[in-house]
Image 1: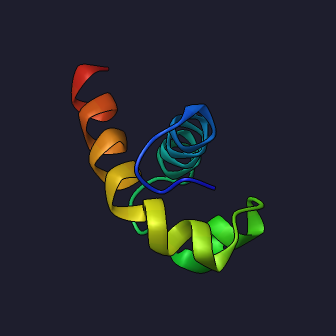
Image 2: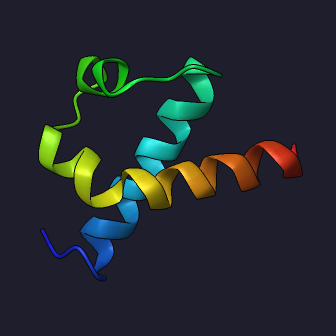
Length: 60
């Protein structure tokens, strides 16, 4: 995966943000692993996905 761009990166961040929103407050790495994300994906994209999930929640 490309941590700084590419369609796979954007898709992963979007999917992770959606998972975070569906899990809700208190979402942990373990929750994301249960949703099918790897430790590496969480480390690479977790911060950006968290920011996106927060922005999506405010927009809703």
